Structure formats: C-alpha cells, structure tokens
Amino acid sequence: MNEHQNTTHFGYQTVNETEKAGMVHGVFSKVASKYDIMNDLMSMGIHRVWKDAMMDWLAPRPNQRLLDVAGGTGDVAFRFLGRAQGATATVCDMTESMLIEGQKRAEAEDMAGRLDWVVGDAMNLPFDDNTFDVYTISFGIRNVTRIPDALREAYRVLKPGGRLMVLEFNQIPNEMLQKAYDAYSFNVIPVMGQIVANDRDSYQYLVESIRKFPNQELFASMIREAGFDQVKYRNLSLGIAALHSGWKI
Image (cartoon, rainbow, N blue to C red; front, side, top):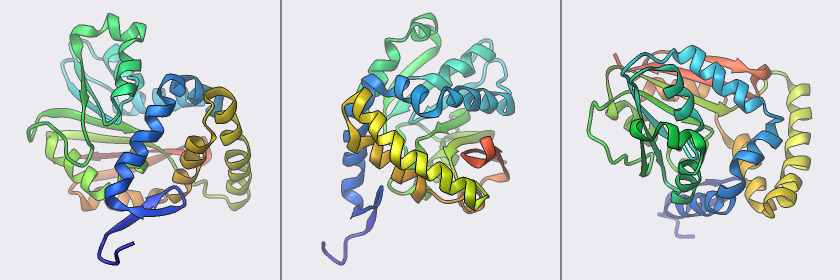
C-alpha cells in the first residue's frame, strides 16, 4: 500500500480510507433482507429496549424535524414519529437496499406522509446547514471511515439548540464481563450470521468493528471536539451499548 495513502480499519483489517465505504456498503447490501431479524437474534431482542431508552432520554417533541443517519430500515425514525405529533423524519443511509427494506415495513406505509428516505454519506450529508432539530445515529457511526468528519457534519446540519444522540455498542467497564461478552460475540454471532443470513464474513466484521470503536469517554471527547456542548453518556446493559448526547448551543 502506498505510504502516502491514509489508512483506517475495516474490522481488524487495515485498509485504504478510500476503500472502506465501499466495503461497508457491501456488508449491508448483503445483509439488508435479514438485518432486522438478525438484530433480534444477536441481542435477544434487547436492541428494542435500548432504542426505547434512547427515545426516553431524547423525549421527542411535536413538530420536530429528525435526521436519522445510517437509519437503515427505519427503526429509530418510526419510534420518534410515534412519540411526536406532527414531527417529520428523514432516514439517510448509504445503502439503498437497507432503505428499500425499511419502506416495505408496515410502519413506513402508516407514516409515509411524514417520512423521507435519502441515500447519503454521513461524512458529506446532502442537506443544508441548520436544517434539523434532532440528529440520531444508531449502530452506524462505528462503520464511518472518519468519525470526526461525521460528527462535524451532524453539527453542521443541526439547528442552533439542536440535539445529537448516538446509540452504539461500547465497552463494558469490567474486564471479566467484557471477556465473557467477547466470547459470545466472536463465537456465536458469526455462526448465527452464517445460519440465518448465509453470510459469516459480514457478521465477523460487525463483531470486530465493535471492538475497534472508542470507549465511552474517548467518544464523548470526540463529540466535544466537533463543537457540541453538554455532552453526556449513559451505559446500557452494563455498557454493552451506550447512549451519547450532545447539544448545538
């Protein structure tokens, strides 16, 4: 690899930055049709509890405008609209096949007049400055090639007074529990991916990408560096996942 090329990680592989987005796109294109069922199986349904906790802390208000980045099949957007009368949501994802799966869901038909589906890159969002009241990203930011760029884009498209909220897998602050969770993740999830989605490699990548993601404190500092104030986080299920919140003041 040319020494002047910038590199990043794709799971445990080191790859050229210019290659990662295409590799991530390939992963989610392959798993799109099984994405929702695999989420239920991998987390034993707990991802639904985490997303509800996200909405509890976010406390959606009437007529707000949400941008859900890496929003895939619409889980978070549907929850947001269900809690906020008159609100609208834009689901943005780089993988069109994920958005197509989301549009097939019953909730999408019920909320069609309040929902937009847009193909776009978290590092270069196709939206004007100061457009949205709320920006969410769930289990997606660890797949971004340059996380600081995505956070700066989040800041740019939020209105003054707008809020960022990130739901992501994270680190358990207990070494023994972390080792037990790693054993489950590396030995069970790829096998499950092979059985259910006929795709072991994509789920091996997803497990590895979790281990490469910054811990809670480091990620909070990255949010602050992007310009956000009042940055806080909450651990979920002992730290298997975490919610990070920040405000554009």
